[in-house]
Image 1: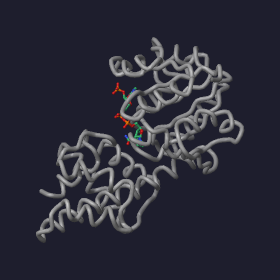
Image 2 (image 1 turned 45 degrees about the horizontal axis):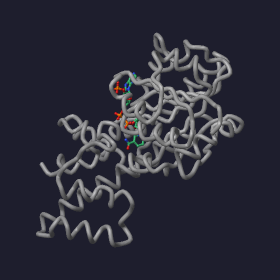
Image 3 (image 1 turned 180 degrees about the vertical axis):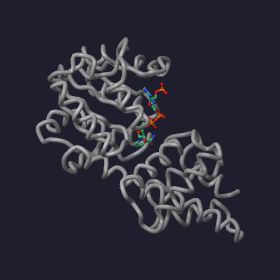
Image 4 (image 1 turned 120 degrees about the vertical axis):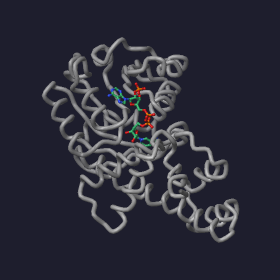
Length: 285
Ligand code: NAP
């Protein structure tokens, strides 16, 4: 495809399928993951392993980062041996992780100080849309940089929404994930209430999914609830993090406190590595 060389840091549940889509689209990609063996799947799909984060910057034109949280993002960009210690001038960095607007703005300034550009493009959608290339890209940044990123964003997602300057994409992501947390806690409470009144789990989930309240996410979480198995597509610890960020961002509506407290307590009870719909196991107790 284009001869733009891509770099990618962070090959977790989301990073790996996103990289595989870019490889399929013909991009040349170097990858870096802190835990080296998690690079294997991307390498088998055609990516090259970069020896370090600085090397990743040196050999790439556009570098994308998909890691857990603010702390990981700070370490990846500004830590000892981080991306910005490489030859960053003139390069474009894209953060696709869910992080706070403040951290995103801080990283933007760090990039500018090195003569590099930065946009944020956190994603709406989980592992399936990441695999299918149907994420929604919630972008914040300057038009020219977003235009430059467009061929990449178009492979990763079905839609790009430009929300404003850096920080606005991060804010949009916290808003949509608040809705996700509410929806799935609502689904879990509904199933438990129905069960307590003698309605089978199958029946209540059919009633939800076949009616107007059913949605892509209620359908996606039906199988895990029925099987009572919750391997992480979106780890519960990440939604607890996103709700903490939303709280720090000033959300104080009536359900915000209870929903944050629920996911946080579920995480503290040991469910952090399971999928976020494992909140049903916490609520059941
Ligand atoms: P994940 O599977 O837990 O992977 C996290 C990645 O971050 C791993 O590559 C991990 O490296 C890396 N990492 C964590 N701390 C690091 C550090 N200090 N230094 C370097 N690397 C570090 O997470 P994920 O599900 O892919 O999610 C990634 C981001 O996307 C999160 O911000 C999440 O909120 C967001 N998101 C997730 C979903 C979803 O459904 N999963 C959907 C939308 C957005 P190691 O392998 O070395 O631990």
